[in-house]
Length: 147
Image 1: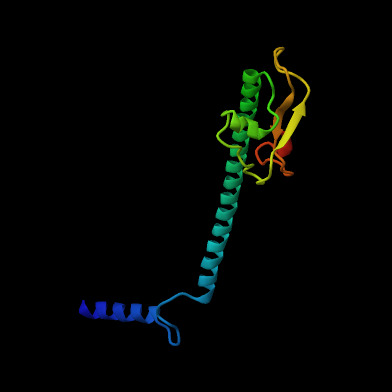
Image 2: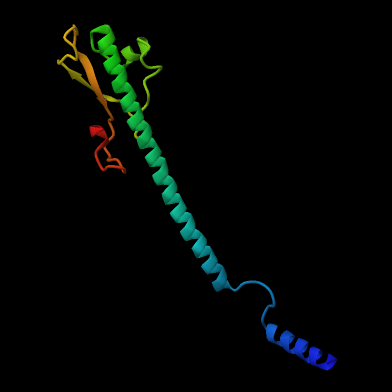
């Protein structure tokens, strides 16, 4: 019985080691395959991260536009005159500060109109605000300037 175990042990040792071959480690091909897989996974992750950042900026843009439009309407109804600049909204305490466009970091495009919201309104001014960005949104493929 002891001889059989010794023979099996020596055969297993002979199979695992060949002359001129290292007993431990990876081959260059194995390392290259692993590194290639890691690079592919990192590339996918970076792309997903950038898309999520852009989606977050677009969400902030929509929220900022909605907030400023609401502030313009409230200012116009309270003062019976539309604001002449976005700074008027800050001065009247309708906004804490004029937000920065989160997508392209540019100034807002304001739309002046001669129309009035209510019959009591005595003057015209800003009635809408848009983004100055030239790109299109990834969520609905509309230009940012139309939001």
